[in-house]
Image 1: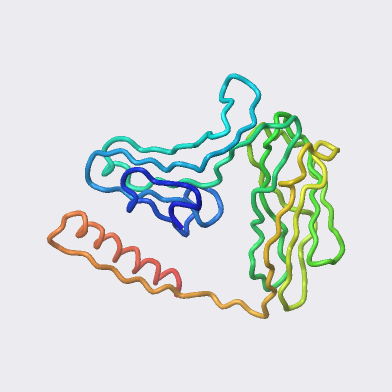
Image 2: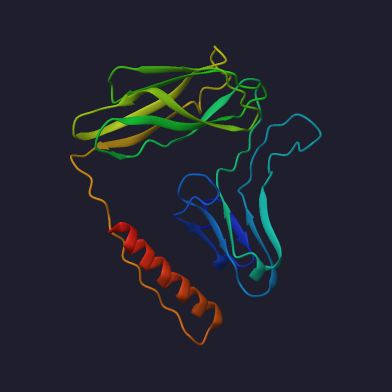
Length: 237
């Protein structure tokens, strides 16, 4: 839904949408602004937030975040937003941001994902754990790291997940950071469905194009697209 619950849009509301993409390098879906002819201003405004900050920087309980575009909207093409963080950084804090192990597997598969250092201290080691349903817990120790504040790290656990055909839940969590529990464990774990299938059949895509020889950009695309399709067909046979 656009805007999200509690958010509002000021200016060009029809150009904002929820997109099933990850162009902002987050998880599907994400916010998307689509270009339009003309010069204007548009704002995506958050709900009111009580920051509970005890200093002179903000000190308000009705704080709002605004993402805005101002200018020639035709030059933007598309603009994407995802994974917006508003946080009070603790000293030592890591957070799970995603599990990249495929949902559908047909054999042993790596347990992979991404964490973010949302704390102030550089992360030098991680203890990562994972579990399928209520099965045994598998642990991986990763050292020699240097993950600075607000940087991300893509991890691969030592053990592969191997299960019989069926539907499961894969749970992955951060056990320790730099050898100890971090300062906030609320964001240390994620879960996702895991489905072991008997067979995987590659899909064959069907492409259909609509262009015009009277439009120069369309005509040039047509020439390149046809050549690409012919090359793709040749390589796949």
